[in-house]
Image (cartoon, rainbow, N blue to C red):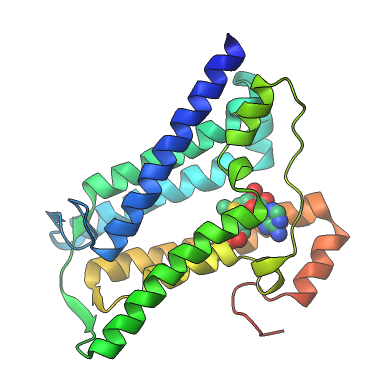
Length: 242
Ligand SMILES: C[S@@+](CC[C@H](N)C(=O)[O-])C[C@H]1O[C@@H](n2cnc3c(N)ncnc32)[C@H](O)[C@@H]1O
């Protein structure tokens, strides 16, 4: 019973993530969804900027704190370890939903591409960024990353191992293709408004800090010499710079 419930919970969390991910593509790209980065509650002065930065900080803190090994060790004494990843994914999705709902728009134009070729190129780049994000999740292990594998193995009474360290496909070109995909999607836009600029700047700072001071430190601790060698060989985010 407990295992079935955990499995159902994992599927629900994955469903919420999938919807949030698709909504995010529409939100950042100003496409199809009711509230977007440039179409929603109007931002007013510094209080609007404060709200946007706060929303991004809530997401960043949830993401960073709950991904740390020390937090997971403590947290899995409280909840069933097999639903830890699903819970992380659910809370990350809820933090994003809060951001989509409460985002304050600032529509002052920073840049606008009028040339159709430039517009088209930036739009293609935008979608390429999201495709890179999605592909990268499959290169690590999509179902592990989003908690489905853990609850399925629990349901089936099979032991679950942590995902393997990968250095193939996009991980041979940069160490963080998933984050590179996000950076491309956040910056490649034919219309950059002040609100979008706040979003892209804060997320870029967060991505750089999280990679350098959190994720890579944990990876070096858990993988050791193999990761140090990988760092020497493969660039962090910009392809062909090593
Ligand atoms: C959201 S993913 C982002 C991965 C990576 N930073 C990227 O941008 O492609 C975070 C998880 O991926 C794991 N991870 C990072 N690099 C990895 C690799 N080369 N192989 C397997 N897992 C990796 C981290 O341990 C962490 O649990």
